[in-house]
Length: 305
Length: 276
Image 1: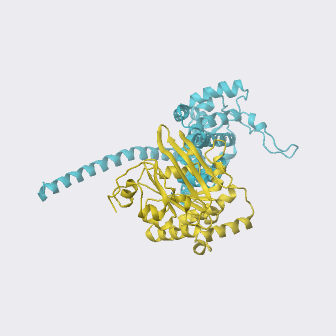
Image 2 (image 1 turned 180 degrees about the vertical axis):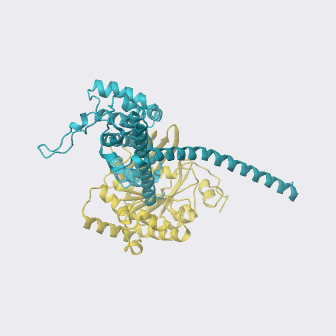
Image 3 (image 1 turned 135 degrees about the vertical axis):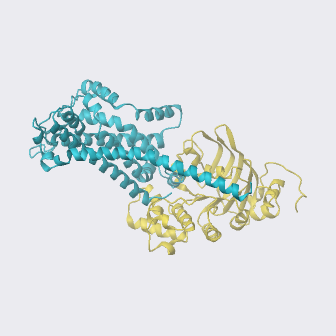
């Protein structure tokens, strides 16, 4: 065993295996990266020339060259606004409750398993639930409100899980320090738990929203229209009472549905519109993910355990 | 000295604590304290008194329950599900039982401060760390906070090192400075009793010496109960020493007496280094 030749052979064999694994791993990675790259390049080739200012200003049209994504862009933004403003408070509060307040017993275990499973439920199931609950039972109609709430339900588990995980990353010693000077549970949550977990929570929130913005199935299920040549009523007006919530009940369309609609048409010109809308959607998602990464780095820098 | 004492009498409370040289009023009296983590009993029938403005040290091998005992004083165990107290800790001058179910643990923690094993400053500025206890009590006046923060930092002998950078993050301080910051945080609210849970075990010898000096000076202002793994430290800083073993109080008395004339064989074995 102490023969240098034998040792050298052993080392050489280990090295060869290393190299083999490196090559296989690289190949596997390339499958993913190249596929994505080809997809993006294809999108850009097809759609880039449609990306001019008028494309963002125009409503959908029967003539491909005059069609635009204005209503879809506004629809997506408003739906996201509803989704974010309902899912964030509910999800964060639920996560904080489960981590900081709830007693650890079989019931919270059950809830934990359910929340994790909910994150994996196919999105169309949320669409069906929303159709029954929001559209019919609560009579919100096929509106921006219904869609926003549906997507909020869908990303709620993502936010809850992200909140819980970033709270769990806070060392117990910090909690003890707060309690030891006489802080109440709420003071500890408000002054320590939430501020120190903001980075992780925001990351989860943005990743959830990025998923929601591209969702088609649940929004189609609740009956989003595909041809919308008008904008929802403006939320602010010059007349009393200045603020209006009529837009909540307005019919709408969103980016992926607009894309889907164009894709289903036979003319090549509409396929180009779909590609252009695809580019916009991908860029929106990338920007959101980039924002998530930036926030994570920014908040992590201040806090080191 | 070793070996001529063969009696191994289990629980024995030295009466020596009662007739200390300068008889101090008692700050707390522990009466047959039991404590359970779920079904396992971690403290068994512990009784002792804590004299006001004195340093009382708790020594004993790992797992003997000394930290568990310390954490009963500020009801830290209430944060863990399935824990249970038995017996009383009477707290003076008002003679309340701080283990009473009707006493809110937050009320107890407002009167009894704690410094932990590892420095655990908040990821906030030096100022905010020290001011936090007052903020919790609703203090908003910047001038009042500033005065209290300065006083606490002076008491913790940290003021000169940090007075020019109160808005720096606490994490930028060295380990020893962080621990003194945690002491300042505990002192800022004027606690009546200060609990130290092995406060120097994560520090280098120099920082340890600083903390020990500090504890020495603090005893005029506040009653101190300190858990330590280090017997020399107990001998250096404390007036009274309690030796615990397997959840029981084996011996309690003046530090000099416990270290030079231990009455129990176990204490003697421990302080002479036979185990632990």
